[in-house]
Image (tube, rainbow, N blue to C red; front, side, top):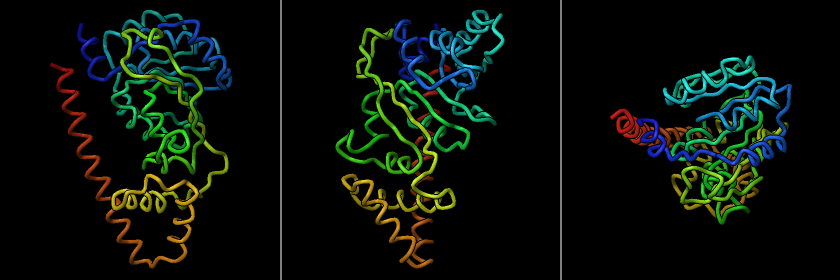
Length: 266
């Protein structure tokens, strides 16, 4: 079937351990007052458990066959809303929401970027590769800080709350999988008004130097100096070069995503 090809392309493994799924969701902060977003629900194992604890569940499933399976499965359930689309094209919610999802590994970074850029995203639990979790959390969980980790750290807390066994999934993944918790910080380290300047500063730093060993504290000290001491002209140059670097990255990612989509359609 076509959806099997799609799952291979996007590296999604279905979580089939129902008892574990229930335990993890009940250990989360999700409650009856929460609207919860789910990405790639598949056949609805996580969806079913979310419906027992959340006030409202919005599930986004790209595969047409699975979407219609979910429509039949939850046809008599009032607090679930199903969408058939690519999550990266999905318009995010206009109200505060949480997330619990077993996401396609191949687009993990795109998903995390989209969520952490959205002001209504409060907290999320994502089943992802252990290596991806290391990139998002950075030091001390990993041996270095990535650009993604430094961009996220002022605004979100991140930690691994569960480590899965291969037998928890079908098909069995050939990588280690974990449950990553991402929670918005109520009082972020950097004010919202400074977030664009901070992003330019970090992107420029990673595009020019090997800065992975810098601690988060060192980044904060250097950013403070940048804000107070660097001339407006130099800041303008940093902004231009940072945004060009991101534009080039985005172009490459779009090309790769288009190739995956073309393979899936074929």
